[in-house]
Image (cartoon, rainbow, N blue to C red; front, top):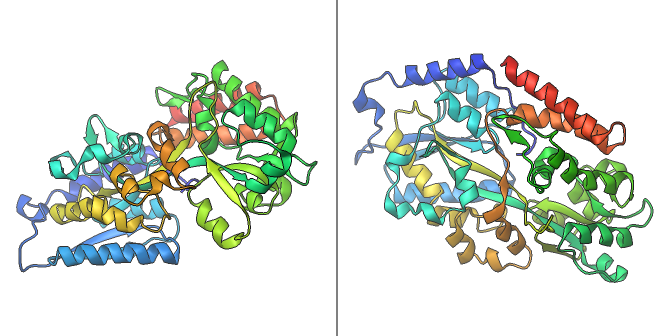
Length: 419
């Protein structure tokens, strides 16, 4: 979800808009997609692949939906590779799915093309919009219109090795300054680092804005501004100067979850997906979770979310909405999130499942109301690619942080202007 390739050009946007107009040119009666009794409607649902356990859960939810809606059959299509490219190609060709997954980071650009159906007119009072975590639902809004409803999410939280903290005689840090100090006591040369880091914008966005700076301003890169550089400097210094933090490749790991599980890092900031990974791959590790330490007295974390959206050109709008409303409604969402692979974007469902008070997931749920969603305007893919390229060079000590971010900002904005 965090690293999908985004290919968005003006030409593709124009073709997508053309595809919508073409798809909607049929007569009104046919395009309303009325669900008539005695006549079965097939709705196509497209998404990317998941674990066998998640696939089984979704299958169960769809069976429950069909049982309650006997006149609607769901055809589930899994797009294993290049998901967004495939979906866009199908939308251009007028063969797009009726309902499909849309990642928040990709939502603004796709919504801009007009291929996603606004859902305000479908929503009834009993759908309970207020039940959704506010930052998550706002990620799929534009000009007061809802274009999708989040099927689930994960924030980031602090994972800590209980035994390592106990041996070092330190408490779980609650502020970033404490995290840096605790990291010094937890670090053992290059054998164990106090803190495992992810030097990329998807994980540091909230840090970059912690002192009041803005990474994105007017849909352009703005991350070279002094407040952003100042906020990111301690993160880089912990790696370069204090030597109490490392990235996964420094210790031969693929990601911080593996780094943590191997005992190469005493603390990492990771998401909900790390829990089943640790439980299955490193079952003997004793760990706890806490909210991300505050920066300058403010709470912060990231949120990653995906919505169910409707193809604006579908001729089965009523049936498509019935599916979306069930999948993102309280009953369907409770089944889908019951195993904890994804957290429910509805507050009531999180409470019903006990996630808000869970020893581990409680920290993730607590972060949802104040999280920075990984989504900001149509140009974020260009912005984060350029940020990552230069930020890594500063993180490795190959360039001054301010200079690196200035160069990255200039390059990003030039690419944006050329679109």
